[in-house]
Amino acid sequence: MNDKTYNVLFLCTGNSARSIMAEAILNVAGRGRFKTYSAGSHSTGEVNHFALEQIETIGYPLDNLRSKSWNEFSGPDAPHMDFIITVCDKAVGEVCPFWPGQPTTAHWGFEDPAAVDGSEAQIRQAFSKICREIKTRLDIFLSLPINKLDKLALKREMDRIGTSET
Image (cartoon, rainbow, N blue to C red; front, side, top):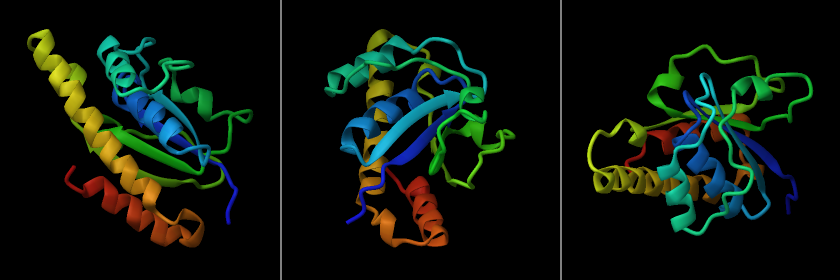
């Protein structure tokens, strides 16, 4: 039995929607196995209200959710990260800060629901779709026997999750 709590950082460009939804979902679904964080390379400074609505709709708490820069997690006082997962296409090509401890990294690209131009119903539908896709990938991630996989095997599995159809 492994009682380790793993720290996971979800990265996106604005840290207003996808990374926030991933943080909220895994923090609850991980049942104490994971402590989750999210950040952006160019944080917007506020969480998209459609993302908050989606998180609340599926029953996850909104406490402590805020848009923040990834600089908060690259300093000497930052928590040690075990996993860093980028969740948008723009972040995958960016130069990331140095992450001490060589965390396992993966890219799980999701379309940006905040970029949808349409009615409120169309925007809500886009957020709902992406939230479901994020939850599906996190369910797969949660099923991995993390404590039994070596670093290379874990990286392969996380990359596989990132390329799976959700």
